[in-house]
Image (cartoon, rainbow, N blue to C red):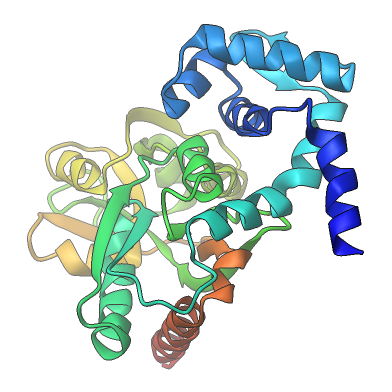
Amino acid sequence: MKENILTDRFKMVKNFDLNLLTTFEAVFIHRSGTKAADALGITPSAVSQALGRLRVHYNDALFIRDGKALAPTTVAVGIHEGLAEAYDNLIAKLQNISFDSVPTRLVVNCSPYLSMFTMNVMRKVLDEVAPDCEIIHHVSNNSLTDIEESLIFRKADIVFDIHPHISHSRVSQHIADEMPVLICRGSHPRIKGTVTREQAIAEEYIFVDSESASALSNRLNVNKMLQHERKVRYISPSLLSIISMVEVSDLLAFVAERFYEKVKNSFDVQKLEMEFDLPSQPIYMIYNKAALNNQFFATLVKKMTELFVDAHNNDSQP
């Protein structure tokens, strides 16, 4: 019976190049034929030819030019959502992650800041369950596109991000909450210790650059609480760059309290008390569901989650 089913499936796909699905996913992620070609190591012409064959097969444009980007049609979105889990499982099988072998290395994608308190948790667990396993840290550069690509094409085993990556084939696990604080230089000419709403409105700011919708949402929430659009004078993806700029200017910045506590004695900066509470920023641990078929990976995730929960509970105690 199984042989007959497989034979029927072979007949259905015999004229379809399954490599086209990889090209499709790359274009879907990057919204660009050129960027997809770079990611796959092929020419833009090869991507165009692959899209042409897919358009004929599905009798749909699949991607439509929208400014400089390629916007997926509803058919393309349906194909992506329908294939995501199966495609992920296929790559998992090819990489043998469904077996119970212990890997010699794990690749983690996250920002330099998030690595400050996530990598130590992973290293602690690995010292217990796989002391010879090394951790390779890839920096996300705040790019949702890079993170999506790393998950779909398995360039990373685990991602830590402030943005939940919603997908049928992935788990986005809430592991921590970051509390933002407002800081300025210690010798600020107008502010000392506390800041009123009126003072906060009058000052100029530094903003952390990020593609994350969550970070943007927090910025808008602050603007709403201030009842005023903040004037931003400096934008950077680097917290070290930001706090260095705060130290030598009159600009204010919102940074994670955890980061401030680590560096406050190395920089001439002060934390300001405010008239309103700021929204917290959730942190997520993201991985492919298929990876849980590997007993080692499932154990790693479970033990890391327990440590993150314990740390969160300890931080929450008065």
